[in-house]
Amino acid sequence: MNTKKSNLIIQKHKNDKKYFIWHPRIINISPFIVYINQNKKNVYIYTLPNKKEIRKELYEKNIPCHPSEPNSKKNKTAYAYTKFVKEYKYKKIYYGSSQGKSRISDHYKIKNNGFLLELDNKYVYIGNVGIMEFKLNDNIIKFLTPLGYPIIYGQKNIYHLYNEKSIDILKRSNFKKSMTNSEIEDTYYKIYDFKNPIEIKSIKVKQIKI
Picture (tube, rainbow, N blue to C red):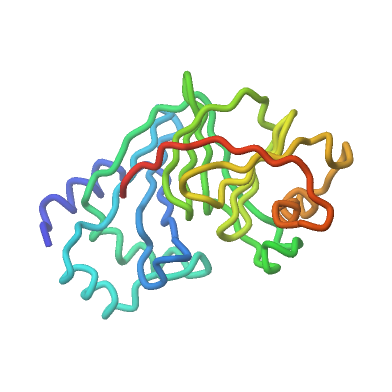
């Protein structure tokens, strides 16, 4: 473990908001940390060095493996995330959450488990599906993040980001004009409703390697 490097990173981001992002496919380890500087509108992402001894050490220390873990426990492992992944400067940021009332959320209430950044010429999703860059021609109304199934609710469409390579697009006109958050989240099931199918389009995304 490079203690000097770790201390420099922690010192650099001591005034930033810190979020651990959990990945449902990586059960034992939070794959990356997101630091958000709201004054400068900067986002910094770090992950674990690809070293078996570090991962083993974290595992032995009962590392955070789920969003429900308290921050006091997660913060004990922040020193290990020293591999820089990406930095973004955003115009606007959306903080993901779910009230836990939908079927897809498995009734798990959660917040800040995903972020959507609006940049000058594209959007960036950061969350438990990974880091994805893409373009949208729509006005975003809200950003919901039931566990493992992030959703963008736009003026024209509903966007499902559960796939690491593409985004499924459902037209708002297929649904009623006013929808609760739970109803928006559960539009996911229309993607696989083969008895009453609706038109589904998709766009490719750029997946950032972690």
